Image 1 (cartoon, rainbow, N blue to C red):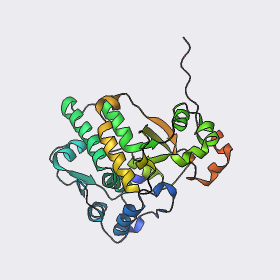
Image 2 (cartoon, rainbow, N blue to C red; image 1 turned 60 degrees about the horizontal axis):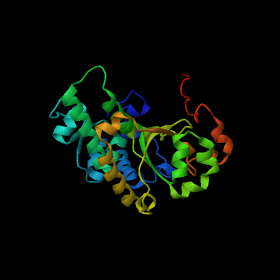
Image 3 (spheres, one colour; image 1 turned 180 degrees about the vertical axis):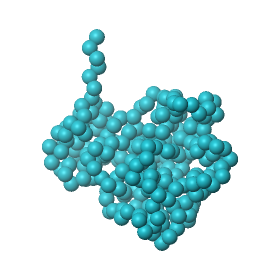
Image 4 (tube, one colour; image 1 turned 60 degrees about the vertical axis):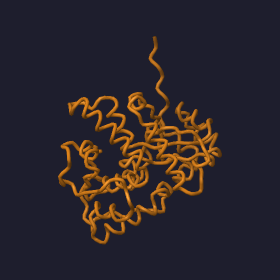
Length: 270
């Protein structure tokens, strides 16, 4: 899905491709496929060709401008199974998400295409398409102990990251949004995901990331319905606060920055 222009939208020939630090902890789930696709780009392949070659996907990646079966981006993907792909980081990560979470990506595309078919393309997307876009671009999935979720929902950052820090050993955060992944190429403290919670199960903390990804993919495909999306069920999470993801967060004072770790809004006075 398209988003406002940014550095990750710029067309990048292989020679200008930025160095991606695949050793960073947030890339753990993406490292194998991402590194293999990147290697093809660096050897001269287009992003579309690299994504098609590295692994099978339920869609075909085609160069931007290739004819589709319908005019709108989402409708065209739904009708043709072809994803227009530019030579930039934004579309590179979009393709990686199609590889890792194919059922969830197909469901989001279905929601968008059906909303467009019903309501057309207007000046505003409406709540369902807005929420689908937010999650597609910036979403993540949390599975972990209740005490962590309650702290996250309350924006109680000290409880979430300091008081109950040890509980993160039983938690898993899976990044989904392709714009979110692109932002983490140049990590900064304020990068924030829109998080859904899925039930904690053994596959959430399985040592095999493929098992965890498949379970999350199936859950998302059933969970991302228009009714649920319209309710905007997301909770903000500054991802570099996750224990083990950023050296500076070992200091409790890291979480005192109110520009990033904002308290929950108080309801207006009656």
